[in-house]
Picture 1 (cartoon, rainbow, N blue to C red):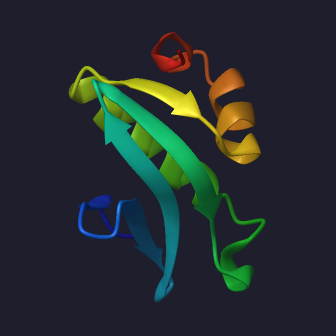
Picture 2 (spheres, helix red, strand yellow):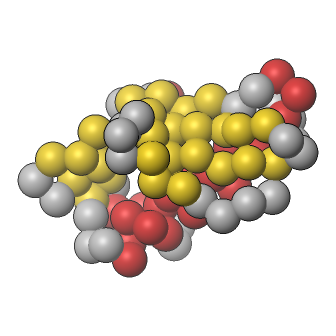
Length: 90
């Protein structure tokens, strides 16, 4: 597993595992991250890769004092289940 990458040119966070990349498309505006879509390649689905990506992404937002607006259903559900990051949702 690799570190979280913020690929600002593509507007997405990325994380590599087992030679494959999971990603979260986002937009950042006025101190807020809008998470539009989270996806893992088929080989990583069911392994927790998307959850690890969300944890790293949420921690980055917290460290940068950003709020998160989840557009993606997966991102919204993950944030609801994660009490340590719920305060970021707005």
